[in-house]
Amino acid sequence: MGTDPLQELEQIADDAATAIRQAASLKGLEEQRVAWLGRKSRLNELMKHIPSLPADQRGAFGKRMNEVKASVESALSSRRDTLAASPARAPLDVTLPGSAIPQGRLHPITQTIQSILALFVPMGFEIVEGPELEFEYYNFDALNIPKDHPSREGFDTFFIDRPSPDPTRGRLLLRSHTSPVQIRVMEQRQPPLRIVVPGKVYRPDPLDPSHSFMFHQVEGLMVDGRTSFADLKGVLDRFLKALFGPDTKTRFRPHFFPFTEPSAEVDIACASCRGSGCSTCGRKGWLEIMGCGMVHPNVLKAVRYDPQRVQGFAFGMGVERIAMLKHHIADIRLFFENDLRFLEQF
Image (cartoon, rainbow, N blue to C red; front, top):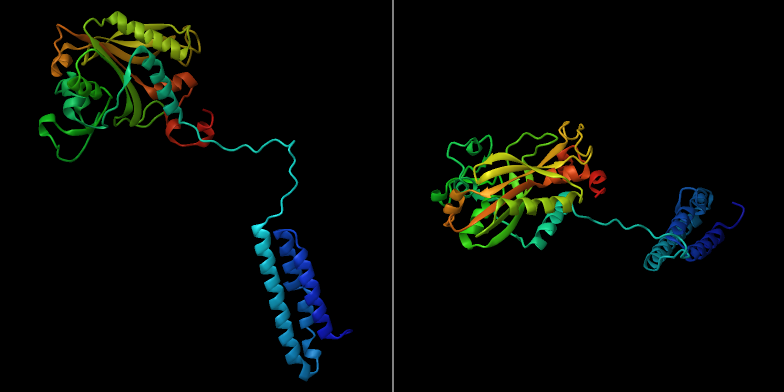
């Protein structure tokens, strides 16, 4: 060794202390750790020369070597704590654009429900909700659906495999439409009334681009002493024009529902072809949008309303159907896959 090893060791201790104290960042401090304690550090190089020292000096030199290493480690730890508590800040350039902060947003189905409800509330409709676990009485019986109707079978309704808490109201099931809420409201209130009912419904349909075993509906009901089918047409025409645009054309086709009479299905002119016919509308020029009709007298009797004194109308629409038409979405499954690439478009 060309110089006194003990003197060189003391020089290393001084140089290390100075360099560590001057480290301005955690990255720079890591570089100092490697420089003074790494495999190629001056301390390690100096350690290789211990065997060449006189035997009576090796013990003292080795002890001092350990003290220097301990002091370097302590200096590193102390400086690391200081830098972590007071991190160095880069100069702030106020001319740079700010960093975009990701923001949550409402699901497109929730947005569609809110848009629908916001159009009915100014027309005097009250928002009401009801249970998803329902009795057979409310889902079928009170709505004038016959005992032998196919919708009461297991292939069309999710029945719950447990005893009913009220056998007089039939079996428990997951509601297959939001219409049971109409019965519950009419049982508790007297006309006049106007309600809209948003909520989830369940049917054991196979999952495909246009069907799901769980989807959303918005149901509407208006009952008073002089409500007519003309009122129904006026309310729905105004609603659809507000939702799809003032130039939207509507038409009412005769249909059958057990709980309304007369009944109709409502179509809107295809927005893609303006009624001339295209692949979107199946070359028909029209798109089915909802079902409606005048409340059946048997339904009014079930809630102890007098059909001779009051009458009303009801309508129901699938929210996913509305959203798919409004946003030109071809597959209902996209709403439930939680793919952010899809959801962030809304």
